[in-house]
Image (cartoon, rainbow, N blue to C red; front, side):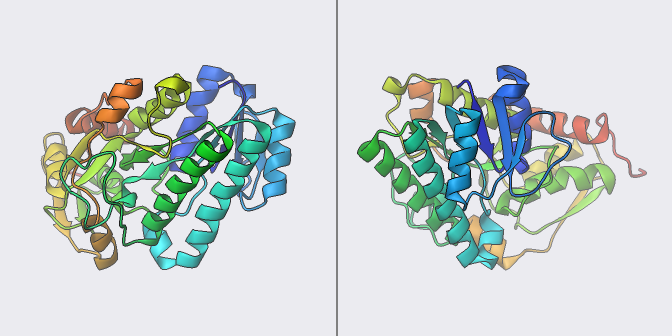
Amino acid sequence: MKRILVTGALGQIGSELVRKLRFEYGKDNVLATDIREDKNHDGPFEVLDVLDALKMYEVAKKFNADTMIHLAALLSATAEIKPILAWELNMGGLLNALEVSKELNMQLFNPSSIAVFGPTTPKINTPQETLQRPTTMYGVNKVAGELLCDYYHLRYGVDVRGLRFPGLISPGTPPGGGTTDYAVEIYHKAVNEGSYTSYIAEGTYMDMMYMPDALNAIVDLMEADPAKLTVRNAYNVSAMSFDPSEIAAEIKKHIPHFEIKYDVDPVRQSIAESWPNSIDSSRAIADWGFKARYDLEAMTIDMLDKIGGGITSKTPL
């Protein structure tokens, strides 16, 4: 990667990834794009609707990009509310990214998700290759997207790479409509209010990853020797699996008066129950050395420190 174009650069992953890439590859070598204008970006920025294939091509060519990191998408919970928009944006945007990457001979990163799995998928230690019958529009989009990536690699030789992300947790950009957002919200509520009402039920386990590990995984995969990659649709990656009560217990070690309550949202709960409890990352470890550095304990310390300026609550004891 030398000249990198990022779509969806103002989202949860994009906003933090752009900062990392600019630090590592140089500010002027990373072009951030989003459908919204951002006048505060410290570096090149273009307004780009990923459904506008011609503009995507022109922007990438003008920037002389050799890599596209395609992050623009409608996430899981929002996609259930707006399924037609989700299909049009998620599939149309990816198809345009694949076509532009093919025409300009670019590397392409396309994020997938644990949403590709469904209720009939093995829930414990879910393998890299297994049954994928999701019951959400977001999951359907991601399965179709993985197949498209495979097709463009096999048919046209596009150097496409991807990761099946679990829930991503970060103190920075607010959540953007995902089912796992509770695991971000709970830290903010703990610091600022001392309590949190979870829309996910106790005992519901989902795979999670701290954002620094996710960003490192993207860069490591994109810099990996292509000859060693045995997966072109998306690699399983994970760092930890927990339910709401376990994250609450970890928070209570630092904010003893913290309380968790439950008011389950049936839509997001049903999505969560269709996903695996834990997935097997062994192929990513073997092929390109994937490694997660944060577990629940280390992540909790860092999250509370970054949100609260130290591991203390702003609410009275």
